[in-house]
Length: 73
Image (spheres, rainbow, N blue to C red):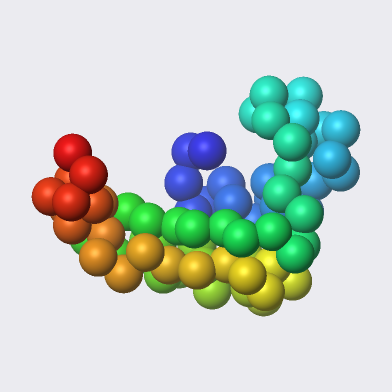
């Protein structure tokens, strides 16, 4: 995914178009979606956008990428 600017159109695509473009199944509205970015701002924006589009289980990893790297990397 290219970024927050592409997310809205991607999440509104028909499942077949999504799969053709991204080589992955389009997430279902009830699936858990976790967004994150380097500092946290874009991850939060993506989460809020997904929630507005009906993805109620969309969440932002508040620790952002840096924290994830410290814990997992």
